[in-house]
Amino acid sequence: MTIPKLVLSSPADILAAVPYLVGFHPADSLVVTGFAGAEVRLTTRWDLPVAAEDLDRLVSLLRREAVTAVFVIGYGSGAAVTPAVDTVTRLLRAEGIGVTESLRAEGGRYWSYSCDSATCCPAEGTPYDTERSRVTAEAVMHGLVALPDRGSLRRSVERCGGAAMREATLRVMAELRALPEPGGPAADELAARFVAEGLARVRRALGLYDSGGRLDDDGAARLGLDLAVVRVRDEAWALVDDRDAHIALWRDLTRRLEPGHAAPAASLLAAAAWHRGECALAGMALDRALAADPGYSMALLLRQALTYMMSPAMLRDRMPTPEELDDEMGRPRAIWLAPLRALLARGLPEPAPVPGGRQTGSPS
Image (tube, rainbow, N blue to C red; front, side):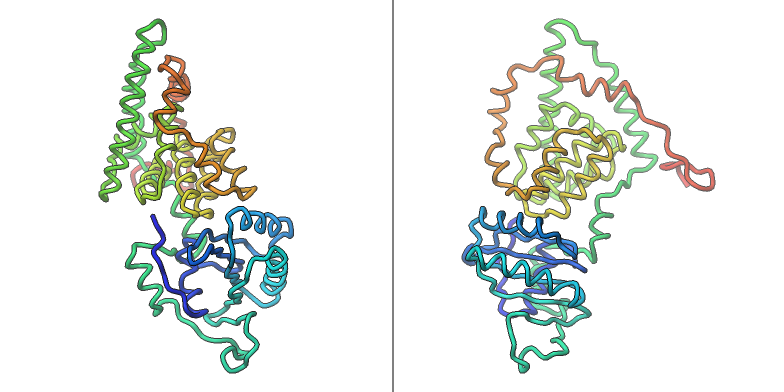
C-alpha cells in the first residue's frame, strides 16, 4: 500500500491523519511522524511514559532515514505528555531536525506546544472532530483503515480457527504423511517437486487475495504446511512489497492456522507490516509467531530489528531475489523437508478444555 498524498494544513488535519498512519486511534501515546521534504518517511508510536534510551534510538532512526522535519503528537494528560514532548523536541533540535508542529490531544481537544497565542490556541484547548475531517474522508476513500484502539489491532491477529479448520488441517497432514521417506535421488526429486508446488501456491494465493478472494480451509492448511519448508517461506518473504495482498493473506493465515503451524505465516505478516511502516501490527504478529515457536529464527531476527529500530530498507536491501535464493540454496535436497516431517510427526495437540466441558474449536 502506498500512503496517498494527504494535504495537512492545520493541527486538526494532523490529528485526523495520525490514526491512519499508525493503524488505530492512539491513546496514552507519543507519535512522531518524520518527513523528508513533503514525503512521509516513517511514523512511530510509543506508550507513555517513554524511556530516554528509546528516544535516543528514535533520533538515530530519524537521522538514518534522512528526516528533515517532524510532527510530534502526544495523546493523554498534560502531566504524561508534556515531559515526553519536551524531551523529544530538545533531542531533535540538537540534531538539526525541525519540529514543524507539536500537539497534545485529549478528550476531543488539542493544545499546541508550538503556539503561544490565546487567540488561536486557547487555554481550554481547541475542539476537533476526526470523523468530520476532510483528511479522514480522503484516507477512507483510498482504502486506509484506522481501528478504534490498540486492542482492536491486537484482536485482528488473534486466532479465529475452529473445528472446520482443524479438520481440514488433519486431512492435509494425513495426505502429506503419505510422502515417501527420504533416501536416494528420488527423495531429492520429491523435495524439488514439493518446493515448486509450494512456491506456485504462494503466488496463486497472493493473486487470490489481491483480487479480494480467500483460501478455503484445505488451501489455507496446505499453504501453512508448505511454509514449514524454509525455501518456500523465504521466497514468500522475498516477494513482500507494498501490496495489500501480503497483509491480507498472512494475517488470514496467522488467524486461521493451528497454533503450532502459525509461526511462518505470522512472521511473514510481521515482515509485510514492517515493510509498510506498520510497526505496531508487526510487533503483534511477532508475538503470535513466538507464542507458536519461541525459537523461530525469522521472528527473532525481526524482533531484534524492531527493538533496535532498524529501517525496513536495511533488511529489504539484503533480501535475495527468488533467483538468488535458487543460487544460494542450490539444488533441492530431501533434507529441506525435515522441518515439515517433524511437524507432521508431532501431530496436533488435543483442543484445550474450556469452562463448561466444551473443547476449543468444537461445534456449539
